[in-house]
Amino acid sequence: MLGRTANDLFWMARYMERVENMARLLEVGHRLSLLPHEDSGQHWRSALQSAGCEASYLANHDTFETRVVIDYMLFDRNNPSSVHSCLSTARRNGRAQRTAITREMWESLNSAWIEFSRKAADEVSAEALPAFFDWIRERSAMFRGAVLNTILRNDTFYFTQLGTFLERADNTARILDVKYYVLLPQNELVGGGLDSAQWAAMLRSVSAHRSFRWVYRDAFRPWHIADFLILNPQMPRSLHSCYAEIVQALSGLSRSYDRKTDCQTLAGSMLARLQVLDMPGIFQSGLHEFLTDFINDNSRLAREIGAAYYFNG
Image 1 (spheres, rainbow, N blue to C red):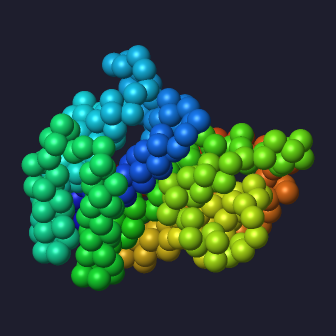
Image 2 (image 1 turned 180 degrees about the vertical axis):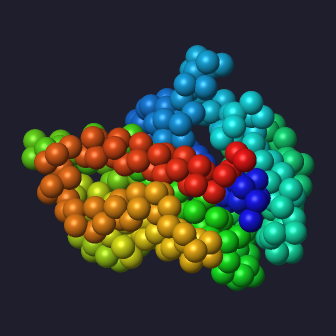
C-alpha cells in the first residue's frame, strides 16, 4: 500500500473517532452548564482543555460563554478539531481513497458530511442540542459499524484500527489528565467529597457511566474510576484496551508486509507496562505524571507509525 493511502486511512479513522469524542465532551459540558450553582465557564474551559482547543479558543475569544464554546467546537472552520473540520477532513480522505474502502464506509462518511453541512450554528437551538449530539454520535457509530462489518481484515483495516484507537487512547488520557486533581486519593481523605454529577460527567465523556456501574456497584471511588479508564481490559475506551487493539493491528501489518518495525516494539512495551501496573503504584508515582508520559508516548507512536509506513512519502 502507498504511504499516502495509509496516511489517509489512518487520519480518516482518527477524525471520525474525534467527532464522537467532541460530541461527548460537548454533551457533558452542556449538562453541567444547566446545573444550579455550577461554574459553567470552568466546565467549558475544562472541555476545551480535554479537546486540546483551549489555546486556539482563547486566541479568538475572551470568555467561556456556552453558546460561543459550542459554536467553536461544532461549526468553526478555523478550528481543526471542530466537528465541521473533522467531518470535512475525514470525508476528503475517504474520497481520496474511495477504491480502498467499502461502499458502506464511504456512504456513512458522505451522508454525515452532507447532513451536517446543511446545519447552521444559529439553526441549532439550546433545546435541540441534546438531539444534535446524539445524531453526531450515531453517525460516528455508523462509520465504525461499516468498518467492522464490511472491510477485509487486511492493511486497510489495520491502518483504520490504528487511527481509531490511537485517537481514543489520547482522548481518554487527556480527559483523565484534565480531571486528575479530582481523582487524587487525598481528596477523599480530607473529606472534601465531590458532587456525583462531576463523577458521572467524567465517565459519560468517555462512554463509561453505565458500564462502570456494572463493574463497580458501590459509590464512585477515585481509584476505581482511574483503574477502569486506565487498566481495565474489558472497558473498550480504557488505555489498556486501546493498546491491545493497537498491538493487534500492528501485528497484522507485520504479517501483511513480513517485517517488524520499531513502532510495533514501542506499542508492545506500552501494552506490557499497562498489563503489570496497578493503581496504588500509579497514584504513588503521580497520576498526572503517568498520564503526561502516556500522552507523549502515544504521540510518539503515531509519529513512528507514520515514519515506518511512509505517510509523508
